[in-house]
View 1 (tube, helix red, strand yellow):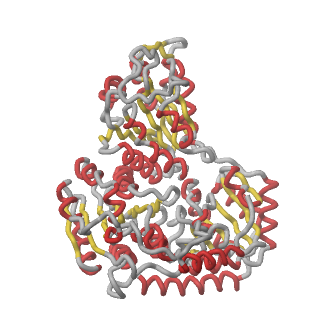
View 2 (tube, one colour; view 1 turned 90 degrees about the vertical axis):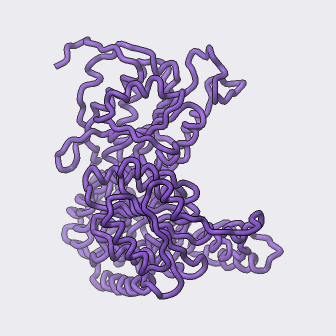
Length: 624
């Protein structure tokens, strides 16, 4: 026991590190692990003298991974937190000025995806004696305003420490925000460069070991009863399962609910891998990047039970995927998400809420004919996917690469992708072998997440499943945007298998451009007016220069053989294959998606496509 009133003199930076070292989380199996798994850092004048000094002595217990780019550090931290189902987080530290500014995109990604991340960033001097300092943005009418204020829009908690004692309020608030199922997201703490080194006599009890638990809010019985009554009255109910199902640890409960009450399940992008592909209750992914089977089900359902999803437009087909008179029940830890589009809210933890609904339903089952019809549609979709992913069924395609890799992956291998055409192709074509093994970042749809996120996921995976692989699907556009964590994975011996599928530019946006009646322009490299002569990038040579094994293959058969070699290796491998930018897309399974199209144009094709696009709007639900 600590004597009351006992203090310890520490710098602000030392106090932050000591506090993080002593925050633990109790997992569902009863194990206790440190909440903070370590950090990603690039040092500069704004953080190296003091925060660097504080981190050095604890580098074994709180490992600091040296990043190559602050933005990619943030992506890696987000993927780490997602793998650990928001039970653990990483901090990111950057120097004042551009280093910190580079974290803005990553913070927005974590905010959109409701992922915990702690940002410890340098700030300008409290005393202002040396102002203006290197990399300081001066606002003549407000000397307190700077780059760090930009994070207020993309964080759940924001603070700038101006006195050492403030840590005793700020750090617990940041931890509690990252733990909160409803408000989880990135937390920003600005650390002025002089203040980081200020010493203060902190109470020793502030640094005592503390074990946290995820709060499981029990839903209101009145809301549960109302939701159960709606479910009992429904003739064609469906469950939309989102990422919150996994964060709640409610995967088994979801399966039990669906099986006991004969309710089909369709998955969101974030909810991919809630159920395995062969689960008879799994009707497939829903929405713009979904499946014919799930969208057939959603369109005919008279009641939607939305569990752990924020119902973004790719799930709802910009709110055209459901019948206008269908009722919605929103089971969500967050009131904001539970009440969307006039939903009947059941605000509470997904696992607790599912359990309460099962008890209230008291053995009720939906009509068997409804589930049977949905399952018949799923069998049709499975047949389509089998043909769509078959090697040699046309020009090299994303789908063929996905099918080839899917057949060779172990059940616990983790798949990571983001942005461009690959999220749609993976969501539609991937057959899940084990729950929680698919990370498709489409909450912020952020190019560059793929390889960096793969590195973060691999760090997390190596803590629990060191024999499983992390497999990254990335297009040539995202690869060129952010690839330096190939080097990071090699340096840290965190093996990745990276599939680079080269279609010569931003092919999925070229597809959208054409689908809206426009001519190809500035998306594929060959269609850029400022490019006199297009040429292919040597991705193989580039990856090798960063220490990875790399090979270029001509077709999916060669890709399969290269993937087997990569699986057998203990080193990061990059496999490059060209795919057709025009043919081979998964053209089935899509719902309407609202895209701004030109109301006036000299081009008849643009006018025609605008009219065609707008004709689908009649199915759009009105709501909030």
